[in-house]
Amino acid sequence: MSVSLKVNGATHEVDVDATTPLLYVLRNDLGLRGPRFGCGLAQCGACTVIIDGVAMRSCITPVSAATGAITTLEGLAQNGTLHPLQQAWIDEQVPQCGYCQNGQIMNAKALLDRNPKPSDAEIRQGMEGALCRCMTYYRIQKAIKRVVQGTAAARVDEAVDAAAEGAVARTGEDAAEGAV
Image 1: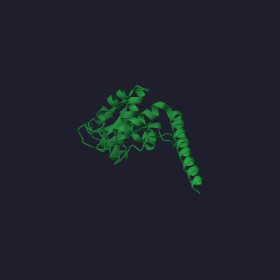
Image 2 (image 1 turned 60 degrees about the vertical axis):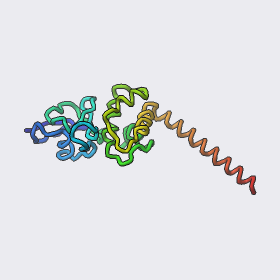
Image 3 (image 1 turned 90 degrees about the vertical axis):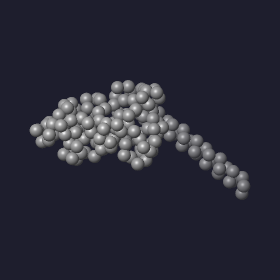
Image 4 (image 1 turned 45 degrees about the vertical axis):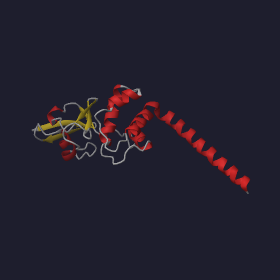
């Protein structure tokens, strides 16, 4: 059966069985590596994609049911610039093994699209079901909050941290001069 999919803004025609999981088509036929096979039971979230604004588990979604616009991790960056969530993940050093990060970022994107200023409790609730074996949940929450606060606020925090580090360095220099 020929299926037409709109993935990351481009239309693709694939010839597959209608019951084939969307994950297999994305990875095997379209060569996208963002969504990953984790459990195959929609329990871990590693395969998460966004279909028409809703985070969906592509491992159990038949390709025939994927009739809306599909966004994968690869579709978040624009014109060579990382999406703010991707950049926040780097800035907060979220990944350890990295396996779950596709699902984490895609769930966070869907969460922020429907609630641009979630509370800590809403972040935790919105990220339920996206499992991280390395237990980086606090860093994930911090990265999401970084995006919520905006990059300008994050830059202010970085400037304050840099100023504090500079003050510590100057205090150390002053002490060293006094010792001479």
